[in-house]
Length: 470
Image 1: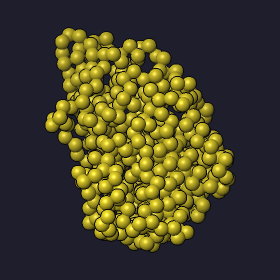
Image 2: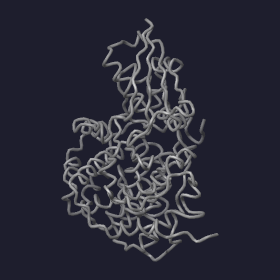
Image 3: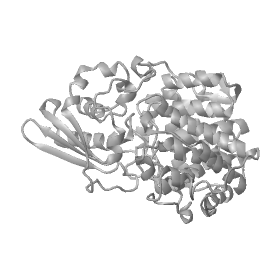
Image 4: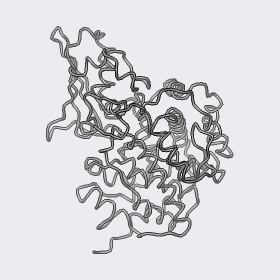
């Protein structure tokens, strides 16, 4: 086996270690919005059955100084990152990141919180580590996607691990050699298949990536090393996880511009898989434009690319986790009630006859070979939604980017409404998040996050999801 050139990982590690602390006002503002959004998602997911079961297991691995969202217990940093990452992704309400083709903040924030709390790091240091970790996710993700994702890898738990390792290494102040070691060890921990979509393992993937990022950086701090070039070359990450047809890495593009400023984060306004969002947005826009009633609709057809079609494998969902990966369920909700909320993805909601009656009347089709919808930055999962009315009219709308992207952002009022839906009655927490870059230490924020959220029935508690996958 030929020894690979060592330029790729070395370039990323050098940038992570040596770039000055991020002070761009735009980058910091976008990062603060991301932390506000993920904090709400973590609190909403704190009582999900997947989160509670992961916490039950992690409790047996030892106590520590790191907070667990919604619980009084304190775990060691790896366990805290695992539990909090699972909570962040439990309801699939957390953001997406275009180059990663996965969920960025659900991985990065829990890992950063764990390291930052143990060290008493400042809010600015936390935001800086986040922006740097996001840059690493973008670099690795752009090098392997979409080939990597379409092969079946869940990028949240593969690419996400590299970003978490880079963010934690940044927060720990590792030099370029130490960052290289952290990235190399992250390579040994990266894994996770999209086969787990619709099960408790799917949200746990975010927790595992956060945990592995913490562990990789901590092991590197202790002097553990791996190969100097884990990303490129034979048997490297790109070779094994994507192959020669993948785009390849662009070291000169690191930080030019910052990934957070180029792509932003895709904050979700619908609590389900991002693959349905463009289709739902298009349907809601058609309803507003043409003012038709539910009774006037004969059927609905949605045309999507392969990446969305493969993700949405449950036309007749039987569990709440399956419903989050069902185009039919999401479109039926949007048609009947004009919105999708957390309560619509629960065992009780799945019994609603007026929603289930529409499932056979909603078709999802894949674009034919060579005629895929065009993709662009933050527009990887477009959809053409067509509504056939009983009077013979056919109404169609194409959506390229979902609401919540950098190009079609959520308003401050929409972000606040989402926060209140996920974490009601938390004004002090919202104030701390608003001033995060000025916080001398992150610990008061995490202390407020330990407060138990209001009790609600867990979206993962249905009997069918316990131990089986349809």
